[in-house]
Length: 237
Length: 237
View: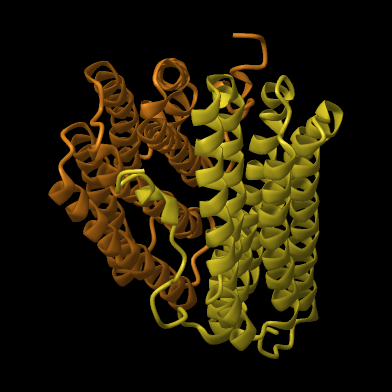
């Protein structure tokens, strides 16, 4: 929580920002979950709903941005109070990007419909998205408790998402090599998998922001997150 | 420029932020140009240089963030002065992402080396990156002049990048269908093309931020930018 101060109107403004961030987080989670369901079930109507929801996300980010600037100008906060507001701006930007990724996946549903998603790939995508959503959910919980320690621990474990993404990436390449008719839809699924993997990155960004809000510093140590697939094919396969 | 004020120390702090943003912008442009040259020429050493440069970008973004928060706390700016600082934070975040995209492309150089990049695709990638770099360069020029009108006009034309990206996307699919041995390297090139297209998005973000810094508002009208490839394959091909 922000440090104590005497302006209860200021408290209200901070609470407004926190509430909106939580709402954005809830909508972002829902968009990601629904986009994967739409992909796996070839559900164009659900995909369209996710695409429409993105307009709400953009409006919420803009509202948070405007409110943050007004609050800084009016209250002239320093230290933890100022970090609280700058942190809200950063988190809103990350959540807006998560919504964009859900929208991007939804826009591919129609292109994939022709061939559908093979059962095994669908399970892989669902697993990847479950992991990313768990990470996002945990980081949003930490946002309400402001535990620097927990924020750091979320940032430090992303390896499972990377491993699943890498295995999906290889599997998609295999499908394409087996039958050229799979190439178009598997290409879209590659981008979908990459989008879900990037949701994990945004959760990690948010964890770093929460650590900064709580301590005023960046977490120490190299950020562990890396896309391991960029060298797939570097050795003969 | 920011509105007039009597603190020359504050002016110095704003100038510091502007200078650092310009430096980040210059380095981001260089990283993108070098990453495409590394791809096209299979130049692993140049790719490694870009990957190393990304550490500088991260450090510069952090420095801008720290300086911005200290400046807000110390000077308690309002109106245009506050927007100047919030804008610097946003632009630094976009430029840091552009550097990441250059790094991501560079990391794929080794995986693509085995097959190399066919001449026609190389030209397509170079064309795409020239357009994205021109847009980035223009938007960084507008940052120094703060012309809301020019910022809006950059935001309103992105169609050419989209058209080139869509044609590259289709071409890459064709290469993959022609010969399964192209699939791995073409998949990496697809991600590279997407990364370059996203640089155009970040230039558009920066244009919107400059408009906001100059006017306090978001530019009116729907943002034109969309990835048109997400429906490729939606009709039988």
